[in-house]
Every structure is written in C-alpha cells, then in structure tokens.
Length: 208
Length: 403
Image (cartoon, rainbow over the protein chains, first blue to last red):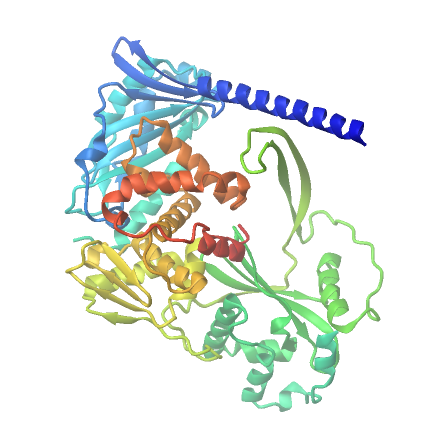
C-alpha cells in the first residue's frame, strides 16, 4: 500500500510539473504574442498592435490624438443611449475611396489573398473625424502606405451625417467591416443593410 | 395520456352547422390557457382580431375542428418563433391538421398542415400528434422517402464542437481540436394554405383572455415624445428575440412612462417607472436599457441600483446591437479605437452571442465589469457594487430565445 501511495504521489508531482511547465510556456507565448511597434511609410507613421493568436493587426495613424475620452467626459451615464448614430453620405463613396487608393489589379490580388479589413471610426456627435483604426489579418499584405492613403481618401470622400442634432458633446463610433472580395464586387452587404436601417431610423424618430 | 383522458370526458360535440357562432368561438379556444405561453396569448389575440373582420375562426372550426392549444409551447430560435397546434376533428379522437404559427421577419403567419396532404412527411408529422395524444392504435409503420422537387426544401446545417484544454476547468488555455458534422434539415413547404395574421401592436380589437394585462400609463408626454416612444416600442417589438422578449414581458405590466426635464441623465428607472429627460432621449436603445431594468426586477426581485445591475443592462444592449449587426457598441465607444481592448471586448460579446454564457467567457465577466466601471466610475461609482454577479436576467432571456 505504501509503495502504491508513493507511486501515486510521484506521478502526481510529475503531472503537476508538466502542467506548470505548460502554463509557464503558454504565458511566455502569450506575452510575446501581442506586439506594439511603429512603421514608417512615405506618407507618415503608423502605430501597430498585432496579435498572432487573435489573427489581427491594428494600424492607426501615429498623429491620432491620445486619450480622446478625456475631452468627452460627461456626468450623464446614459448619454450615448439616446444618440441615434450616423449614416454615411453615400454608400458608393466608401467603395470609391478604396478604388481611388488601390488599383483594380491590387484589389484583385488582395481579394485572392482573403484580406479582410475593419475600420473603427471615432467620431464626435456632429460626425467629425477624431480617429480611425484599421483592423486587418495578422501578417496582412496591405502596405502601410496603402493604409495611410486609404485614410486620406476616406477623410476626403466619406462623411458621416448624424441622424439628429445632438446638443451634448459626445465621443461616439461607427464601424465598417468588409473584405477585398466585397470591395472588388462593389457590394458590401452588411454596410448596405446598416445604412438602410439607419436611414429608416432617421425617418422614425423626431430629433429636434 | 392525460390529454387522452381529458378529451374523452368531453360532452360529444354536435355538428358544426348547428352550433351558434359564440359556441364555435368558445370551442375553438376552449383549451387555451392564458399566461402559459406569451406568444400563444398573442396568437389568440391576433386570431380574434382577424375573426372580427373575416370570420376566419368559424371557417377553420368548420373545416378542421378544435385546436389543442396547450399541447406544445412556443419554439424560439434566432430566426423567429413557431407554435405547433394540433387540431382535433370534431366527431372523433383524430388529429386532422396541425396549425403552425410562425413569427419571423416582422410578420405572423398561420400555415396549415393537413392530413390529406400527398406529402408523407406532412402526414407523418400529423401522425406524431395522433400517436402522442391518442395512443398507438392508429399509427402505421411507414418508410419516409425524400421526393425531389415536390413540397420539400432542404438545408444543410453544420454544428461544430471545440475541445478546450484547461487546468482549472474555467480558463481555456487553447482550443486543441474542433469536430464538425453536417446534417440535413427538412424545411416544410408542405402546408396547404397560409394566412397572414394582423399586427395588433396598437391594441388590436381585444378579445380573448388577456389575463388582466395593463398598458403603460403615460405622463407628461408631448406629441414628439409619444411619436418616439411609439416608434421605439415598435422597433423593439419587431426586432430580434432579445428585444421582443424584454418588451413583451414588461410592456403590459402596469408601467408608468414619463418625461421629466429635471432628470440628471437621459433616462432613469425605478421599479414600475421609467422617465426620460426629453423627447429626444427616447430611442429604441434607451427604451431597451430601461425596460431591461424592469425585466431584472421581474427575474431577481426588486433590488437597489448597483454597479453590477447597470453592467448587466449595458451588456444586454450590446448583445442586442450585435444581434442587429451594429458593431458600434455602447460603453466601449470611448475606448481608444487604436487599442486592442475594443477588439477584445467584441470577441467576448461574439462568444457570448454565439455560445451563451459558459465557464470560459464567464471567467472574463469580472474583467469587463471592472473595465466598465473605469469608464462609468464618475457616475455609477456612487452605487454599491451589488451582490448579484451572475447575469441571471440575460441568461433568462437567452433561455427563452434558445440562444
């Protein structure tokens, strides 16, 4: 019995050791998994946060203002729940901004690589740009200068129209998620639906 | 077997043409018990409303017989609701049809599956109720074969299971294996007729046993506020299961809704009372948030305001936005869009939306509650933390909606 007990104990210690080593290894992997760095392009500098395990790379202009939320502090906890959001000037303008940035060949190339792109817009209550961030695949083939040019073109061509005249200062958001196949086809289904929904909401609610 | 006993005790029903219309109406709804199933109650109201203008109930009663309303409860899924009601022939213990009430894409329809259908899948479905209600004697053995290009549509569904490695049974270290399987789902197109039921969101024509439900009392609402409230109500009633469940449960429960320009925030809730600061404060989103607090009272009992209670309400609104494909979630809008926190929160929301609450995503509940309080500390910081760290009200809605 004693011998048996010792055996169980030895095995337990070994298993525990393996588990602890595995955990330590995982922690090392995860701590190295997320990486922040800057990339320089001809048109500016981008901040980059990438994570292999989450399959994403987030690019944003290094000139973006930091700590935006500090400028938009409010005593009303429920302000954003009453904000109806935006619609964009025209659905086509968003696709046009891509087509002005990327040649047809390049869009086809990125489409065949399965490149996805999500753009997080930080906006104020009047729809003015405060910041933009681009979420792409990990190890994306989209080049930093292409991101900077796309940002420039979106700012020029796409505007956000608030559904209501909102009298309070508010930091808010708009998100567009697509891929280069949709850009190639000129048909971003989700964006179309969201825009249709927002235009319908604009008709429903009395906002002045 | 209980149903069998009850049915056989009934007094024999005379031929339909000898029955007065009120008797037909009474027999048609005889087995309906209100408050057992919210969707069923709504269906009964809609049928009564439609009957006022078309006499549909008399027609269905004479053609098919007496519905057995309480046999099934409503099935809810992401695509909508469905209620199956077997219909008993008047003169014998025999199921002759199944009424299928479906509610999706903002419309309610009645589809009738008739046992005279040439489609063997339809008749087998009816036999299922025959067998269940009246025993085996009438059930033949039958081989069901798929007949292409007739009344059946097929969809291929895929289900996947992930195997997760964990040392503590809570945190997932790594998904080590996924196994997926496909199966075919038969989508019935075999109904003999389809009837649109009316929208009764304005109150309908009444009738039926409403169970003493009370519409909200409105205080100090100008025309703009009334308009916004009506549109917000309709948006939630016609929205996904998450919003429908909240509004259907809370709307007719003696609520008082008013405008109070002296409020410190856009909206506030006390048990049974919702106030907005102005007409422009009233949106589908703000109404959903306040109604969810009322729903929390129903589920947990009336508890004082607390940080955890607020977090659950904001989380619920984010799940609703996610459901309607709006990624501009609420309290994280103030996050640095360049940072990874915003994206991590969306991964968490997506996980809850897809899988419900489980050990893995519940492990991060406290983490996101703490992040929420960093954002909302100046306002909710004065509330006690609260004792209920379990999102019981959301779990309740998920159970109703089969999420």
